Image (cartoon, rainbow, N blue to C red; front, top):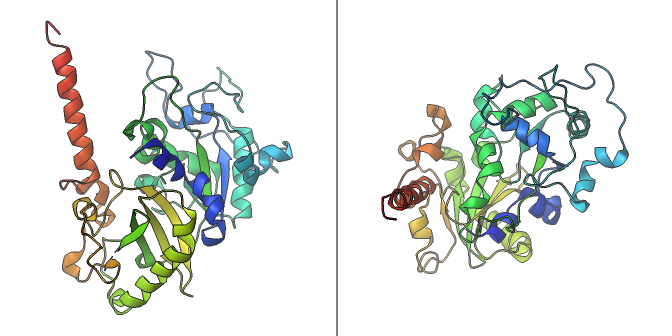
Length: 355
């Protein structure tokens, strides 16, 4: 995975291209003090981090405070220059040594207005990941958020959010660990929450050399017999959508994208992910997807479903996410552990006497 691939798969990069074909989404640039807050980095060096405290509401039950229109318009950020997490930026909160609980009045106001405009409930995510690994901390076990405080709690509790903020760029093969290396600016994407979405209608598509190779059922932790009867129809809808919408517009040659098929037969884009590495291959393996002959000898795009109860994969229903259990050779975690082992050996070698 290269930095350009990671950059183009950020939701704030691809959403403007596919807005008519996706879920309504509003964006907010995240100031550095809020990023430090959700990472728990408010303590000085050498001090024990304080316990996590939810932000103090700037308005309580009162109307939202007045701020400039530009700071409250979430759509305008796509045409503005956001701050970089690795650079100094202006804080939108006032420090108060007598009150350890933080406050982010401008961001809170903007986020709460966006929640209201999107129907009162949203699904939050950062540039690449949603905090779905932290759903356990929510009262209803979902990512449905109706307030700024709920979003802050999910982000602070999510390892996926930490990876986005601290480690995403270091996973790139062409990343240079230097101050001259480009950095990413971070956004909060608020997506309209639809309680009636059917998980069996979400699919992951694999594109290599601009050719759609395969489609996999996204929810692999359950068996849905109704999908088997619609296999050919669903494959045709997704193929047509790729040929007409995704393929001509997206800038990468190798990538994956997730779609949702509505009850009326419309296809909606949910997300884009880089090819390989930490993107789950689901009912495929990366080894077969990267084989030269895969897809070329097939008359149709390979479409895989969980075709029996025996084919169900472990996941959140076992209280352990599938991401953590998929340690097969070639999986994202296998690659991560192998690279970590190589790095440890190099460090030990460098620390030996005489080196």
